Length: 307
Ligand SMILES: Cc1cc2nc3c(=O)[nH]c(=O)nc-3n(C[C@H](O)[C@H](O)[C@H](O)COP(=O)(O)OP(=O)(O)OC[C@H]3O[C@@H](n4cnc5c(N)ncnc54)[C@H](O)[C@@H]3O)c2cc1C
Image (cartoon, rainbow, N blue to C red):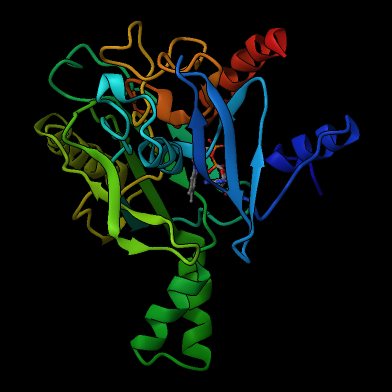
């Protein structure tokens, strides 16, 4: 019903302002002049027909993988050696339990709330920041699958779904990771997509710093179990990626170790802005999108002065 913000609202607004929005347009080639200024970009349509566009100012906003991929494909921002490096993803671990009382997850917004006490503790230099999410995904499909695999059918299946749907609950812990040049994306010329463009290679290893969080997380999970008088039904076993992509075109104060300045302008290409959470030089332990939007608005104010 449109009550929640999404990119759709922006699309509606800019269309009314007369913006020419082109979909099914995959940018692949970016031209630069002798002074490093971007002079044109090219996009491909699904039928591989090519279009060249010129402008005064250019913005790449293809998120934290495709933005550095485009930069690498076109040898942009190369001075820092940081394009595609320092990938951070908020490694996450979760635990699902059955509480003794009905909690009724699955109604309302998809996260009930968060526990923030572990965000910035005095031992942060040794143990990373954490945000606990109280997940609220509808649990019925997983419950039904498990019950069916246990050969529960008919009334027994109904009873199981009714009982577990009310009591199942998942906590997830998002953990801070640090910028590390060894973690990142690079071009994978061995893989071509349907337009013949190179794929991505991803290298990522959780650090000792991130892993140092595990004993505390396990203690906290044990406390959550006790507080809900619950029974653990999935034990936390391994880190998963939280899909928060950061660091790959990092912000900084100088071209020697950063790709963009505080306004998201490329050090090497003064009329090119990178609008993505990939600019974040560190990750903290909290979701990045609102900060990404704030940075986009700030970059927009600078761009508006130049066009
Ligand atoms: C499952 C999931 C859950 C998430 N939950 C949360 C959450 O709860 N809270 C939170 O803060 N964040 C969350 N995130 C992260 C959030 O989605 C991103 O931070 C946010 O979408 C980034 O916005 P963006 O505009 O930079 O990139 P995107 O939203 O990814 O937009 C990039 C756009 O660029 C386009 N594009 C890419 N390459 C090209 C190209 N070569 N040419 C033309 N177009 C191109 C893509 O098609 C896409 O439309 C979640 C992500 C996922 C996947």
